Length: 247
Ligand code: NAD
Image (tube, rainbow, N blue to C red):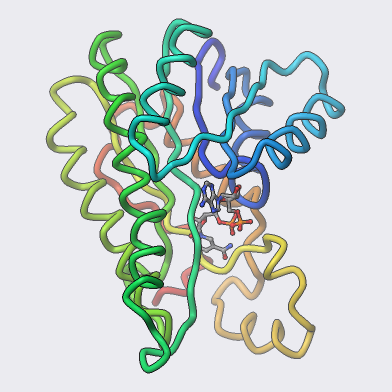
């Protein structure tokens, strides 16, 4: 479904991002994954190469909060592969701090990675996509961007901002043939959720109409659809992948 396409995936070393990287590789894309440290990038690359030595995958660990670092890394990728067709902005941190315990610094930390870093990655990539006549950007939002959550106010605030950025850029970049969408996962079995004890998981499952926690692959399938030509007329969409838990 993605034969010949070049994709960049931030937060691609584990969890949902790693599942997206794998799904894109399985579907014929060349993938550049980003992680927060060289060590974790190399570990992810080794695991992928072990699974299939023919997959064309490489990686970097640019500081997503530094616009210059991103500009340089995106320029390197363009030099290496000649184009960037798909940008997945998936790196993110969550938060569950109660309002009385919050600091301004902590609020800013969540907003910086979950919102500003997306802007920083989009800026140099859009220039390349415009030059090549089109592309596709997919951001990771969250179910709580719609519902809010009972603590950790910065997290849903940041994800609602991701939706706003997605809707607005879809309108602005549509005439340049650049589609901009987001995926809003519900509770997904990444390392943190998988480590929860059974007595915490059971009541959560009862709240999910599909009666199971989402797998990273469930979410990656939505990223595959949105990146593919099957979604050629889909832009400005926030696609929920949450077993209908949001309702
Ligand atoms: P995870 O913690 O397993 O992975 C996070 C990824 O982001 C890692 O690859 C990490 O390298 C990267 N990252 C974290 N901090 C970084 C930093 N400072 N600089 C650069 N990269 C950094 O998380 P996950 O559960 O796979 O989450 C991925 C995305 O999905 C996030 O945006 C998260 O908000 C969103 N999400 C997750 C769930 C869930 O239940 N797991 C639900 C809804 C939305």
